[in-house]
Length: 72
Picture 1 (cartoon, rainbow, N blue to C red):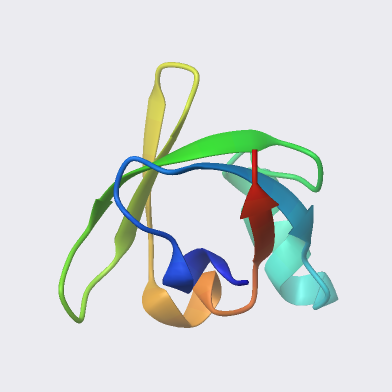
Picture 2: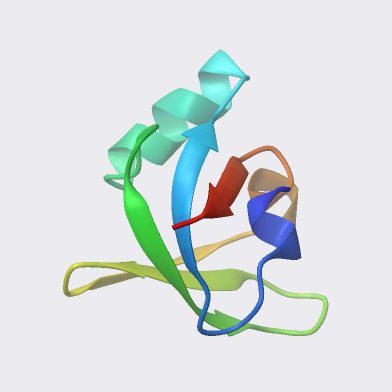
């Protein structure tokens, strides 16, 4: 399952970020493989808003489609 398929309120564990460029971009946001996040909001045809700790991040759909997650 990818981050783009997450539902609002779901707690997720980042399983894999296969692409090196996307992995580097995610690390800049503080998201790495093994991190636990929560899907706060999923805007129709827009970004996915996730939270980790007290930080909220809006991730575009194309980026979210390349981040593999599993339920936490």
